[in-house]
Image (cartoon, rainbow, N blue to C red; front, side, top):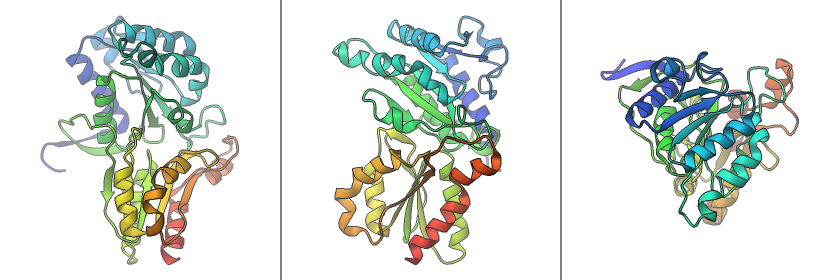
Length: 329
């Protein structure tokens, strides 16, 4: 392990970011189901209730519409709430508050009212949590002007991006992949805030560009490293934030490689894959040597059965197969 680094889980990185920000700014409060005494459903708020007390780490009733609304009210009156939804599927229960209130208040007030609200929530499949607890709903959120949408891939990314989210004066939806929480990463002792709207090239290459979100960044990197031994050169880009989106980095990469594979766990129909492809097409069309391809979740509800679930969600194997097909083609 390198000097000035440590090993922590993805969940601990989030907890540390919350702790450090709450220590820095007394206006930061946490709201959500089981975020207090139990330390969060995935232990991302562990120890904060004991340290900051009931007024700043507040357990809420099972009413997402209620406590998201409370978070919006707290935000516009001077606090910086971090609201945790136990699963991103429950965004649907608070859609009016998020879409018609949080996203629009600053615009409708002519900029006079800020909404410094962060909504954290786990997303994605892989735990056999069935159709109502396994979705990836980022495409819904990207469609709404006024929301920023963040999808961290690793512990370092989660901590740095969460600090930026909490300090932002606009509502931020912070999507954490539930399959990452227990994964251990080597991180720097002091992680600085990571700016929104700047993608990260995690591996350079010349034969194919893979643009990925969330934990598919990690799977794509593994594929690129393994295929390197077979003579393939793959560039992997961690998009980091969907809103704002760094299209410039993608364009420059695709101009070099001539091929683009987009990996996101959302459903393929109406998914963020299509938005990424369309947003860069006019700049890369004449550079493409192969049609843009995408990997996502099939257009069916997420099954409870692991055998069925793992067949429809993205995997390292699917990325590997598609990458070989595209480079070979």
